[in-house]
Length: 287
Image (cartoon, rainbow, N blue to C red; front, side):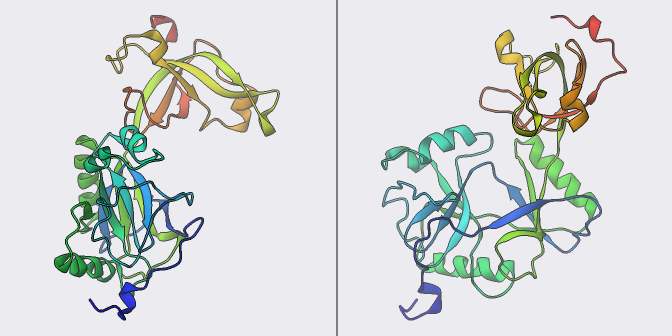
């Protein structure tokens, strides 16, 4: 590729890159004919053609051998170890000095910013480049055509069953853009579980003088690997209405919450209050 090719021109390093952000999918959106790919639970990273930057605008202390043969044009993707290894990935890529553990990380690309054409055409720019300049740590995330809502849900359930976080669906005809767009959506399969309210945290800001979050103990029979009672405690603030911040479920109440996969410690990730389980007698639960 010649030096005067427009693809070799890298933007100047920025303090905070302008990146594509995802909106949430709902079943009313018609996505047949779009492309779906696995939503990786990694660390977002932007390559400006010279350096690797975090979403917050911090330069990663990445070894030179990791970025060997990276292209002189922009890339957007995830630094990734594998499914369910988000915490381990963070511990590797946030150190202040380059180190050998980066050899376990790959840079998984879902976008080639500021190239012309639709999504597949932009990704083809990188694919063509890599044919001449192989980069061992670069990967292009597979894009699968969506043929129906049923196929989308089956693909989602299959990947989640393997430990994936979810899917991303994108309109392949949309030119490159940054910021939130209804042309790029995250699709997640939320799971549900129960816990017992054991206490509260104090509210802040608009909830000062009220309850900020519920302190809950995961109900017996769930996540059996959590043998220590301390490990079974969750703080759930998301999902509470203004009324529930003022008048929360009573201590001892069984509530249902949603979550998205498990943390490294096998705790539910991103717990969100859903409802009080009025259909069950919480007094039958062991403490």
